[in-house]
Image (cartoon, rainbow, N blue to C red):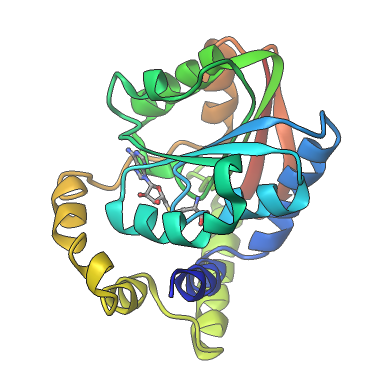
Length: 246
Ligand SMILES: C[S@@+](CC[C@H](N)C(=O)[O-])C[C@H]1O[C@@H](n2cnc3c(N)ncnc32)[C@H](O)[C@@H]1O
């Protein structure tokens, strides 16, 4: 059941994020050019999509996967079971002060995240980047794959990106992908996940949509957080993989 929900999640996310697999490939390529046994921290891992790809692509990697949604964590726990003690799943709210103390022991070699940190306000994002810098070993890398919208300085790119998003969604749903709400309805058909839905509602009830944090904000925030080198390793319209090295 959890493997099926992870596949349905991947289809659903790919209907919102154009070329989602290419973003993952860029992250995996950079990871694989480092050590072959990295300890990777996946921030806001959801049901384990990126974690699963890291564990499959790098057979000696270990991953600590963090999220705050009990339903998605329930799926991750089941779907990642075949990886045994190579994966540790941590339930934590990234906007709470204490979450970094739940990671470890020891520094991490890479921090990754996918389609998630746009849930944070700009000040919360800066704090998470500071926490990530503190958890990384010197030379460790951070890669944040996310949808970073253009603002009104780039009206043509904003319009093109919005229209491309609409087309991606139209095509994805026409091909049978579930939308976000329908995916949770599907998860709720499993009684043990259904029991977690009210707690999920409660945890995310007070999370309003956040102001824009365009690419230049991310790069400045990463430098402010103490990263020595910042840039991008992948872009398609307003989807990026932002890169930073400690
Ligand atoms: C669209 S999902 C992406 C999941 C996964 N990374 C992927 O690419 O498929 C966004 C994730 O961010 C998580 N999230 C949002 N705010 C969070 C917070 N404050 N702490 C931990 N996780 C959070 C949600 O629970 C959800 O799993």
